[in-house]
Length: 207
Image (cartoon, rainbow, N blue to C red):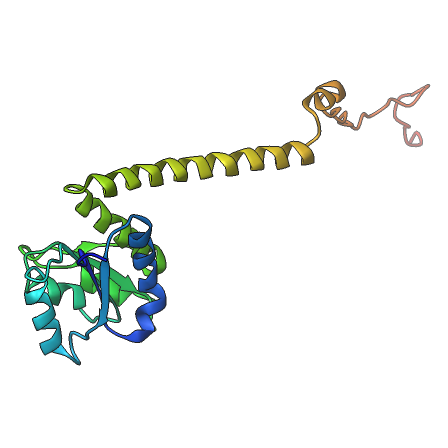
């Protein structure tokens, strides 16, 4: 095993099921990584030391995930010049809106690449980190290309299955064309008929 190129940081062990998605993607692309827990508010000294030593230890990218308005990714970004990817986690009563805003609304000069909420965001963080590494690593770049091709193939396969299911359920077009459009109902209009042998209006008795 080589030195980790990506650091995955999370604010709590409860964030692990989400952040494992980032680790899974890095494994797929053959990128070495490390994982640890550090809270921006409960262990600020650890976050500070981790962020400042990251480049010296050989890290090239840091992925930071946290729920609530924890600002973990922003705090990390303030202590390093390495690219920082933020993953907002939907673990609060506000369903992650607070976490999203705390990551995406960074002041000018302290950028954080903000992913989407939850597991999809963590997965994208892993892919994005690999893309950053791939700039200087041909093997990772080639694995990313294969990943793109496999995604395309997967979508095409699903599309074919859907077409097959639709063909089995829907009636043949020839049958629909033979039946033709449904007949229109004739509107019934009420016609007033003259009474046969109609005579002049009856006159009253002569005075």
